[in-house]
Image 1 (tube, helix red, strand yellow):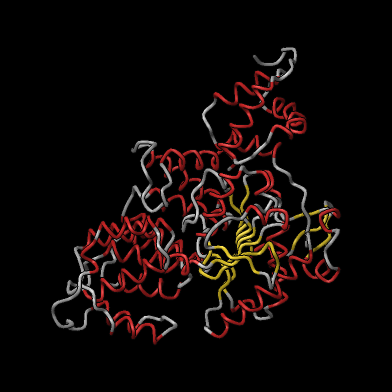
Image 2 (cartoon, rainbow, N blue to C red):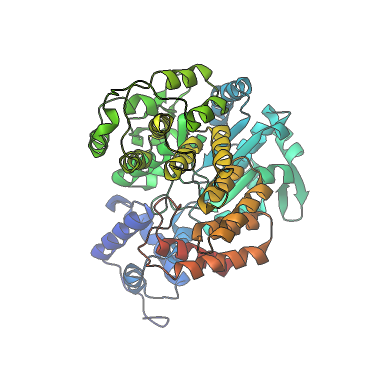
Length: 518
């Protein structure tokens, strides 16, 4: 019942049900010993939904469909927004000296001037903006680099404040004076972060429990560094392990995950190794080591295409189109390239078997093995260059997820020159341009994809998001509406093509929420 009701005590049983609901849908874990603090938040939640009776409000919430609006309102009252610039300065010093400096040196040597960072619970933006300022100090020639910093959060209001980039004294209490003078400007409402820093960071809504990641669609793939601070402590053990596993998949091999010291014991993933020379709460991803061990899931996938590993009975065939492509492509390790070309001793099976296997490997996050399998198969194939396009598209995505952006771009453009009417190739081309922060080129590629396929939902969605970054709200709104129109043609349970297992119903919900804010 709505306003006018007399408040009643909340039963322990109802508190337990509500706690379970929040854990399932938001990952927020409230054990019984924390219920006294939990109860203090419920009056504010009830008021937001128009209830005076708190018990009836909880019962109403539990019975409602789980929508983004509902989760957003709950997040506003249940997530903590207290943070500030250079919070725990020791951690930022470690990131600077032990992670970013070696990474920058390595990328300079390989002439791959790109760095990708994801702040997975960015709150009001202080953490990703701090990292942007640190990189500006470390890279005097930062214009020559492709720097991508993503800040995501479940709280829409926090993200609004982050995008605005205006902060009061309390958020700046730990910032070095040099940074304050160089990167902020005093305004009537506080201190505004400089346009240069603001441009380096992109903010986006993301529910670590419900949403899909890593994904090319939301920019959560092939990160060099992921920060997930003060989040795991709110998750149950099961939810926390799932989040950690997905965050690890979002890292390039050798990338780093940073949590708070109190959360370090909650990180339990076989591919994440603690870095004792850095800190007990910074982990390095070592995917290649684990995937070289016995893995029951991989063994099952092997059964799908047993004949992939049959020995060849004939002599090596003449050079193929893809072999020539691989020789000319901009891979860094020429010796590895030559070895792949000269040591292929296994026969190839039909493409469907290979495609089934590599799609399974891709879902497991073994992107390096996807690259090896597809490259080897295509080198052996004697078919024309226009065939195997489905394998090529998996390969391009695997290149991106392993951080081989130049390779991905070269491969995509090579095959676009063969088949310029393939909308998915144009969409992948746009995704690669986004990774390079080439927004105009990405928009151009998306226009081609949409022209070729008028029902390409995720292309409309990506276009809408890109137009928002350009403050073109009118055109963005048009594209988001087209997402809804195209999704209305399919079942809510349908998987949206090229959206990394995202369902039509979930994508529609996200878009409808965006439209209410535009």
